[in-house]
Length: 448
Image 1 (tube, rainbow, N blue to C red):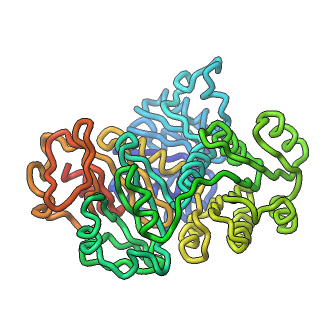
Image 2: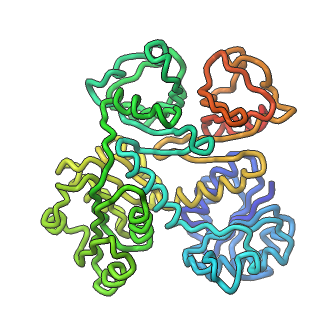
Image 3: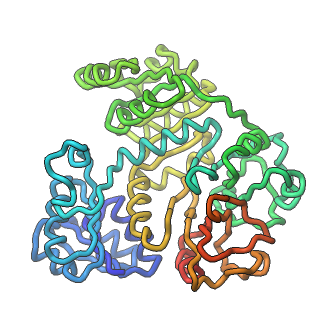
């Protein structure tokens, strides 16, 4: 597929990296030479220097022959104008990152399609949704609904002294045969392991499990956690992510007790007027004295989403020191994500990755129903339909020579979902849920 990416910032860079690894024909367009130099040095893509709002530059970058353009510059206006021009130049599908939610409102006088945009991505909305899922599941670092909610994939840290520490996966499968599950990945000291039955689980491992939703509490307990619902939450930062998260929590079935700290007085007043279920405090959310005064130590969850990512990490560490059950930090640098596994923060959400994941999923929508990256590990959950030309039909999984970096986690057949075992066979039109390393995704396409 020929893909044009307008914008070589963090989102554009991450997207270009993933798509080039999947052997797409990628061109990256940006006016900043420093960003293009970084892309050129590290990625196997073409680069074009210029303004994305220039028709001549878009033609030079191959917009007339591109199957897809993704506009992810830092400016909404540039992304919208570039999208309009690209559509006129013949690009088949256009995806644009637009932070202003006015275009997506039901009463908007102009629809995105009228501007040449097939899909709008809202990074803050994606990040708020990720955080909302994490605080809903108290013990998990990742929560990914699968198979229309019948299954879930969650990330759990194995605590010292838990029942599963020291056991291998074959032992666990035999001991809990009545509760089907599949461990699809293990993160150990920064290294991602695609596990087999002989792999042993160790304390402080971060494991990713697929199971039926009703069975998840069993595994949460086995790894040394409790799954008591969280009710008291303190949000540090009243920016767009904080506002969207507070709105989602206030509409949730759980009766959340929500505090939000916002340093700008006018913004704090507006937030308080918009959401009557929200207790808004005016102050510096990075001030440890203020956090202690406002009772952070009494909270069930602490979420720091300010625009200062280093302060978000430090605030969460302080909250964890004060024994807050769940801490989540918002960052924009991907290199900070693996830190959460080693320094004690329960979860780190990367706002740029949330946007990149959503764009990537949309690009794959033709063949794959779902593509979702997992925090802290270089692996993706893929949901794909087994077509008539699928090379693994009607054979037990244990007889299939799966390529390295791929594990089959579950299968959905009609209205029934099942955890994949060695004896499971894949039939035509099955929805197959797979975990794959980035360099193995092309092999998944070839198999299915």
